[in-house]
Length: 458
Image (cartoon, rainbow, N blue to C red; front, side):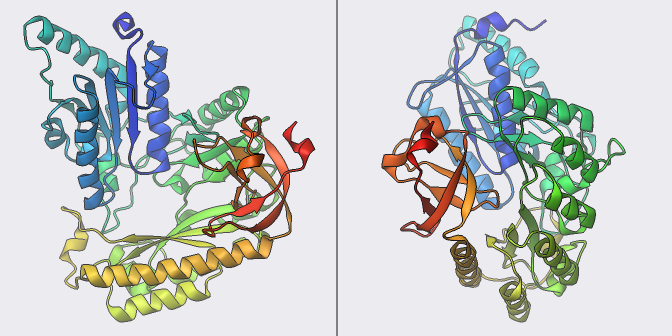
């Protein structure tokens, strides 16, 4: 039996590193602690519990995780420090040895956060009574990748407007550059019925938009014998949710029928995020990706056929092993003619234990930066052209609560970011769908400015 009374009135600080899936999980952890009587510490306020949810997509990410943990320990002296997430799974013992860390939970254990926290908290209290007050426990709990089987449900918005619904976890693809299968385990998912119930709860709480998150969400259904298309159709019927977005889906798992359904659905927005990683077939083979550029281009053309104004984001990795100059030029040329909206450019990072290390050709850091710069400039041009096509049009925007000192913003159906002048900002607009006319670009060309009618504030 867990004694939650010892947590009543305690305060917790949370830090999320990495992806939207991590954010969703952190929000769920915060809710779990809230149910135990733990309050969220205000900015600048000392916390009794610190929880850091880590990322490990690159070696740089690992370094940032270690820095973030040490910073949290400094800012909250004496706090009980919990670390979880991908880096915690891949190197749990090393993370546990960081000064000030009390508890490290791997991917299989984080679903039982309350159990492990309560157990360790009791141990820490006993240590304090024994005269060892202030000493970190340095406990860690993790299992090998092959034994990761738990699924931690998550549908939460934290302090945001949109909800993030975790529909899948893990990955059974072993791309040569990637450690995610080792950090998250193999692909697994809950039932459609359980996800529909979570979406219905979000609607009951006033949520209007849900982002579907996961590691490889197109693989949904392997555990339950269902399909991504089945899930999308079921969620589309949930009353109260006005918008869904699919956070990222592999091109070989993006079913043509799913594209067609989204084009005519009630609530799925014309917005896709599709990882390409390279526009060179030679590099895709080296990466062990499960498609070629012809299939990728076919998916883009089909989206444009059914949804001409869809926002299409594309992940591209630069400077991976084996990316010879002629392969990068092929990638650049392919992306130049591809009708997509934005490129998310990531420089390749060496990861211990990955098959990519066996590929002999290495791109130096200076060349990686030069290639990244070219692709980012191409991305900016594509995004600005997409935004410019929509200036003067009517659109519906879901506004989000503004951070202090920043303009209030929101997104159209097809994910065009819009901003309100400071004088127009009104907290009552948070989580409201408002019809606007899209104006000119803002000063840094990252959003379109909009002006509201006076009766839009009601």
